[in-house]
Image (cartoon, rainbow, N blue to C red):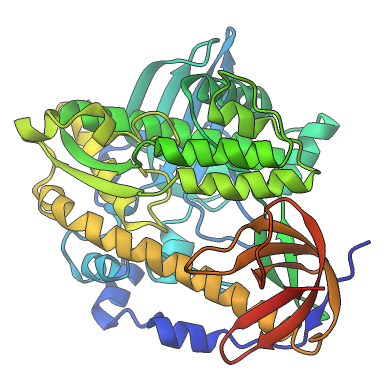
Length: 472
């Protein structure tokens, strides 16, 4: 039985200060956000009669996506509405420039620091229930074999009729009471996941460490992925792959890329599986192997952790519309873990690049010229987005490190059951996972991944945000 450890108070402000993250947008940007109007109001298709719904974490108010999913013979019609941020932000104005400075929404356990002021990100731009909102509407037809047969992208207005979260959707699916607008979501998600495995995609299913505030104080917990997480991610992946194809074919836009895994990394993973006594059938693709691992075994945690080494080198590629851009080899444009072309277009309230990539897709599919303000921005975006990704990851890790140090602060000398996730390297000690409370931390010694052992907590320093263990 899990014994939760609590801390009555944890101050994350120091991390925000250290990273230079705050909500000081400047008066001009705030005024633009407060007074934002839909620049394309007269050109929108009206789809307010379609019962869209949203699926997000329960506390979110920056709702980027709404969906309506229908069966079509043995296939599906996906209507996927994405918040139309570009319609509310003046190109190259104060708010646009401020969002380029930030790059992303940054999340902390005690709240987020939004990419855009809350008046827009949680107000006029958010696809909140029972509100008519501007959106970019993707209508994608998926055949019974999971392939895409048709894609439409255009500006529209919609009204969401209900708001759901992942746990609730999973529970509703199990009980057979899904909302009609997403009744087909489980079948769609399973189909598209199978298609992903067939094309060689690699998906990791490591649970997320989370820090929650409760009535008793701050608590460390694990957030396992629900079935609805996977189904919903297939919607976003579908739109992103369609967007990537549109832009790659046109030779203009912004792609999310990942090089193929180094063959040595794959062999290292095979060796790790063999050392842990886990069979990897000859000829089985990496993605199929990882997807088939039982979730309740310590070896799975170690193998999934080791598999993260296959996904190094993620980047962004700006295409400028030139013949040279069109001639870039396919393997330089694709995202190896997705095993296809891919672009971020489904979270423009939270990620800067989505707004620009979406504008390219709208122009290309309409046979129009890409707006000049988008063309000017494209070559500057990869550097901004790389920096934003690093900032987000740093904020997340620092917040968890602080929570671990505070919550375990008076437990130095206690013993815990642990599983070794990864061996020591030249740069860091072996990494262990403790389920009770859920902690990932360094441990002294030459340890073998996948093994269970007793460890003693030797360090829990709030000032340095360091937690350390040693084998007993």
